[in-house]
Picture 1: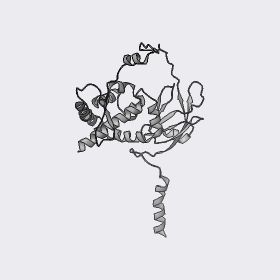
Picture 2: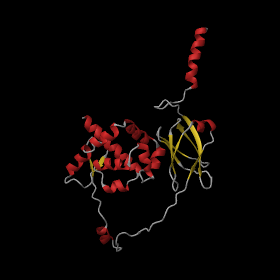
Picture 3: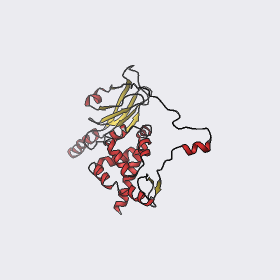
Picture 4: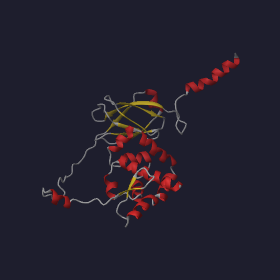
Length: 259
């Protein structure tokens, strides 16, 4: 009987602390809060919320409420069109009281002059097509690899472009991600979260991407330049396309380096 009692007592801690723990041994559990407009105090619907530590994303409902896995000291990133992005550190009090409100501030934009017709068009298709700029970026695929490379226009030959696109980024990527092995795991986690991917697909400022990967914008540009992505792609692609480009470049480098 005493032995049975000891076994039951030993199981109590396991039952009481069954939540998942993160790498810092902090208890991860569901965190719920409300996002409101700082000016009107009305709830904001469809605000994107990302836990930068757990690499999990969600959006607020029509009442501005959201629930996301989080641990104490995790950083939540809030993004909403027309509002200033905000980062909030999760505290013990937020879990304890359970009525946390996050206020987002509206952005004031100064409208600039918009040029609707940057090219002199005549209305005749045969003439107008010749006057449009030509994108000299090329895509090349290599047998055995899942995706193709945009080789850009800074190499003299197609073969040099393809080889340079794969081999040049080795040192840079190793320096950036070799010192931060968790960042490559983050890349894979980001690609598996639909809420994060939807947010990245709607953004072009690299702000969310730099927060997720803990890289500077110049680092992202260096990676893509060394992978021979064209300047037009680096400038015009959305954050999701940039993320996939970085991931593909690194994954294919690893395959070739392993061989």
